[in-house]
Structures are given as C-alpha cells and as structure tokens.
Amino acid sequence: MRVDPALTRTLHHPDPVVQEVLDIWAARFLHSGIPLGDLTGTVERVRTWSDWGPEWMATAQAHEEMGEQALEDGRHISAVGSFINASKSYHLSYFLSVDDDEAHLHGLGKMVETHDRVLPHMEPRVEKIPIPFPEADLVGLLSVPAGNEPVPVVFFLPGLDSTKEQRHGGRGALLRRDMAVLSLDGPGQGEISTRLPIRHDYEVAVGAAIDALESHPRIDTSRVGLIGASLGGYYACRAAAFEPRVTAAVANCGPYNWIECWDELPQVTRGAFRKYSWASSDEEAREKAKALDLTGVADKITQPLVVVHGMLDPLIGVDHARRIADEAPNATLVTVDDATHGVSNLSYRVEPMVNDWMAGQLGGTIV
Image (cartoon, rainbow, N blue to C red; front, side, top):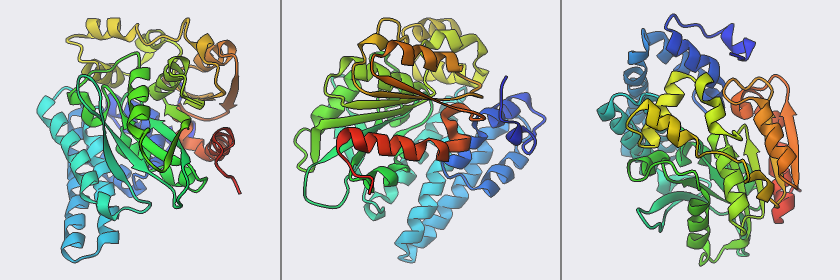
C-alpha cells in the first residue's frame, strides 16, 4: 500500500487496523481541523481497533463539556469552537466503526446534534435547509456571502464517509470569492444514511438541491459548481453528466470504477460501504459497488471539469483520474506528487487553484 512516508514515521500503532486507518486518513483528520494533540492523545489511549470509537467519543465529550460551559457563561464565540471540535471528534468515533449499530448511531446523532447546537452563532452564517426528495428529504448546510445581488453556488459533495458538517468547514474560501456554498448530505451520507442508502445515480440528489434553491433570492441557479472528493469525486462526475444545470465540476481523487478498487480497499472502507449502501452482506455490498461506474458516463460530461489526484493515493489509483480526464471532452487533469488520498496532506497545492478556477467558471471573484 502506498502511503505518505512522513506520516508512517511519526504515527505508529501495534494494531494493524488502527495503523491502516492512520496511514490513510491521518492527513485528512488534521486537514479537517482535528487538533494534533487530540489525534495523538486519543490514539495513545487506543489499544485495539475496538477502542477506536469509545476513545474518540471520550475526546468529543470533553469538547462538548467545554462548549456547554461556554454557552452557560454566555461566551458564544468560544462555544462554537468547542462544539465544532466535539462534532469532528464524534464523526471520527463512528464513521469507520460500523459493526456496533448502537455506538454508530449514537456517534452519528451526537455529531449532528453538537454541530446544530451552535448554528445560530456561526460566522460566516450557516443555515440548515431541507431538500425535498421523493423517499425522504435530504439536508444541506447553506452559506451565502454578504451583499444583495444573486450569486453563484458551489455544492460540496461528501464521499463515502464524510458529511456536510465536515465539508462545510471549508466554505470560507469560496464565500470570499463571492460564491455561495451548499454542503449536501445525499443518499447514504451523514444524517441521511439512516433514511436512504447510497445511490449510484447521484444526479437525483444534486437536481433536488438545485430545485430547492430555485426560489432563494440570493442564489443564481444558472451558475452551479460541484466539488466532490473521494467517492464524492465520482458523484460530481455522475451529476455533471446527467444534470444539465451544472456549470462546472471538480473531482478530487474519485474512482472511475468503484468495484475495480474493491479488493485493495481497507476492510473498514468495505465495511463502511456495506453499511451506507444498506447491504446485508459483503457479497451484496460488492454487487452494489459495481453500479458506481463511469463507463459510458464520463464522455457525457460536457461541462468544464478539473480532475485532481494524489500520486500516492492508497485507495484509488491515479489511473482512475486519467481515464476520467481522457474520456470527458472538456477535462483538465491535475496530479500532485507526494499527495495522498484527497490531497489532504498537500492541500495548499491545489485548493487555491481549484477555488480560483471555479470562481472563473461561475463568475465569482479572485481579487
């Protein structure tokens, strides 16, 4: 397995599953704002993989207690920081720990609850909106830049195990470029994962979200961008191919064909897909994974598309990015040496470029 050697030199664990998780996701944890001390301190308390969920739950509870005290004291700015840290740690407690249903649901519920607690006090402002959908409403987090004129909107699309709460933390860079941001929990994602399973035809979720924003006075739904990472990269491609209202898209480390990755995926990732696709067995999960395939789809992406991939991605090989870029008529491939999955360890190399490119496509600003 290809991993970032700088991480494996500094984070060691005797349990092979814990070590695999650290090798693949430690950079993402830090990039998403998990404090280094929380990462090292929590992992130090973990003896085996079965301890992962409970120990991250304990870390989250410590942050939540600080947030409660801050709210009681009327210190709303501090409360936001503490509850956001709690939400991030609750996410780590459950998102890969899928075998204990009770613990999984508790961690998921607490992640959403602690994030929702401070929505009224967040800056930039965050609004939680329902998105009508046939089987069960989807949910999004929406932020709009200051001003009075309609602005374009960028959708953040989570992947297999990320959620709207984590993705929306990156809204500031796009808001500063005069673009609104909607972070979406679609089928099989975040709090919607208990209501709807993963769907390969993710364009239905994007279409529903565009419909929900049509009447918003500050959103110009003729200018819609998509940014998806990991499995969200597949979702961004799929949605762009079949939702004509999408103006431009970015796919970061997404698969061309999910089943081709299957046998090399970590056991926790296969377990997560089984959980979020509502498969009853590993065999059924494998069958469902076959539907996430851009064969005959990528060539239908006529919008401008940027395909980003880390050359050291241990989950999805760079050949997937090359196939997407080769088949999509208006695609640009950007590979990043020494970058891991999601380019999380070297995000500064691509995020400013991606944000400026999206602003150029949608009519935002980079000045």
